[in-house]
Image (cartoon, one colour):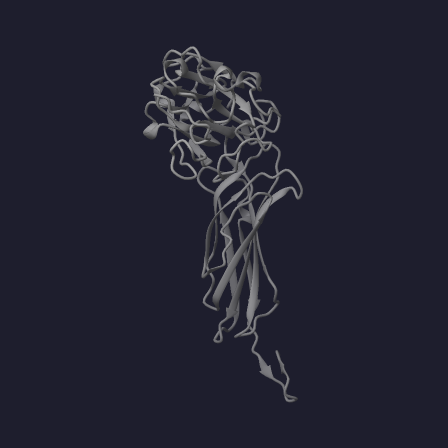
Length: 386
């Protein structure tokens, strides 16, 4: 039975971030690849940056198997965006054999035994000597069939330069789609994070592999798999937060506007930061707070308006182009309580996940403190403050 469709929701695509074609020995990452090879379509993965393709891994390839490509035929998209054809950010993905339609992104052929595919794409050797507490991360879309069964992608890891790929280091990859995963919907890009076992610490012979199989039974559902922006490192990054308002002193019953900015400056060999938490619990002296959020540099946040305290999940890319940073800016308008006295201190924080190591915690908290002054009526009838 033929179940092939041209939808991105059938194939599996991963995106790794490399700022330069190298395996790094310094900087925060042991390895970093973004697959941006400038190819629009039909560039096999074994032509890029030391990656190789292994055939007949776990089964026998058919006469016209699917294959691993690096191109922007499947665009690398910032999660949680939907799959797209070429815009300019290439990904590593499974596409059709040139004789069966060629590289059309994360789409695979499954017309029967002729298309059976058992292929693993393998990174160059990565040294983690001098490193521990490692985290592997990448963006991906992946499906093939439900529950990682007949047709599926796996992350596979090796500690001995690829001589062995132990089953204990195999991880099934599956993501959702932008709609039902029925072969017609685009895949939804997702961030994958894995704390690596101790065997990968201080190891000169680490390899990362991605295995794709479709078993040639004539049934399958796009997308296949695509990968982008892969990083293996200690998760070292630096994010910051600032907080200001539009008043040097606060008057009971008046309004005050706070500006809260969570930011990540561009850093060489750093990477995007996902699922940060921005929080601000407004003190009792502030009431009826309403907040909106805007972004720059590809950041994401909850636009609002929303009421009450801030407890938002944001993403901050490692944004190279002007202005050289990504940021989420919150604007909160509050009413100063009619009974407020003394001063009001308002604190905002930004917190990374357990997968990231923020190298400077001193800039993760910001507090704005202002005195409360009484509103008085002057003898000439004009209002003022003492």
